Length: 444
Image (cartoon, rainbow, N blue to C red; front, side, top):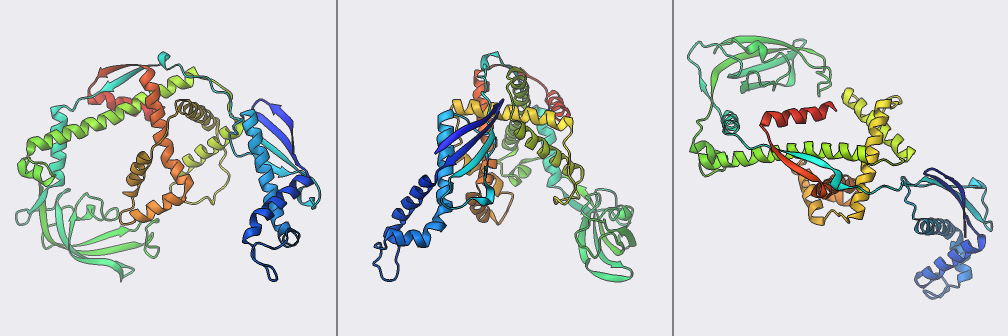
């Protein structure tokens, strides 16, 4: 077997790999010897079929496997010897294409872009500021009021009172399109909070000002993207009878409210709220710190980037942003989306930082534990209530999904590793200052 270099330019590499006919024949023979003990054939005892007969019957079938094994082995030996790490799966193609015939040498071309040598990160030169926010009493009180609002009840307004935005009205309604009632368009004693936007646009607005006993014809048009195709874009009339008008009454902020949310008393609930708020502030502060770290790494460390890797990332960015701007298009049945210079610049940053963090993690022997993966899968499984087991099984069988879950955990652990060696100072700030720092991240 022979490997000959044909290109070595920057990160680009190309080689020809020649597997002789004799080497292929030896591989086929090896596979036949390995399989012989388990083969049964009429006229022979199990495991006693002569190799010559096995080769005549199975040799052609095993030839393809032998070729693949030989080429894979040559590639592995090459990468072990050179230390090259391909940025993407190498491209491999036979020189003679479909014209190859048994008894001839197999010659393939292998090309790839090698991962570049990546300089070490000097964490001691990185200076970071960690924003610290304490949960102020006013923040806790605001959160308490929001909790009380979610636990609100509704009480009947005085007789003849008109419904206001935020009130709950109880209605009977019947919906029709072109004078015909449609399935699912009727209900009795339905409690509807005005302003909740739980009905199609325009429905709730037309019931503001209604009183008990009023008969109201609500005229609306179903959205063009409405889930039921037979109603999408259609004008409809709902005949509504108002049976009750109720005003919201916030729950009292007391020990009873606390117990509704699983706390022993109001003081304990306030403590839980303070902990939750500070955990949220800590997460936001980490996002700001991480961005500052990545910005400094991007400026500090420079190296050549694999062009194909950057092109693939730029295309992905362009595709993702196009779908965000065109949310009605869910498939891939659209024209070519050409990455802009802005997309390419962002792609270069992502590829550079991705390769850098991967190398730092490799050298520091950062790993993602089974327990951490289990927690990640559990967190994702909560998005599929009632189908958790099916999701677990899906993840177990899908290496790509496993990698998608593992990647952010690995990245965060590498970031922690670098931060541990950096110069970090803490700065206590108000919630508003932290909020501005978070908003600034979105503008970058």
